Length: 127
Image 1 (cartoon, rainbow, N blue to C red):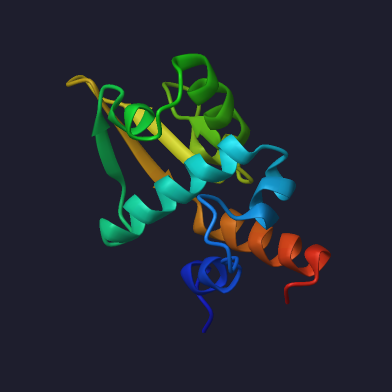
Image 2 (cartoon, one colour):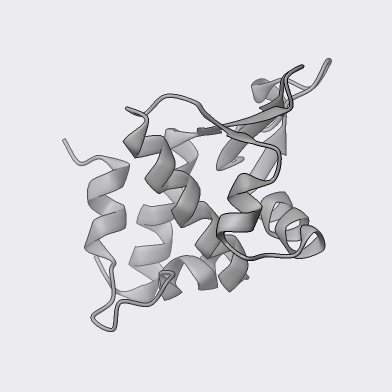
């Protein structure tokens, strides 16, 4: 069975850019592609379970301004809050929420990401 991680690795470019151009085109933003790649990496490292970042550590790691980070996250994510559940955004690539301790949790919607990877690589001729 092909996993989303197999698909993501299959479209790495030879020049080893910090993002995958196929994903940048599919998302309409190189910043969103870089952010998604960073979240996928951390999600995989956490055993495919939600992981957290304290305050703005993810934004800082990517050297994005608060505004650019927010715009990139809005392209790929859906914030879960009271009354806003995963079911409200089945096509979001990332679900995220904040807890009382100031931690922001991130979780990949594997179904949506796999569908996007398959569709974008087919359009790009990579599959």
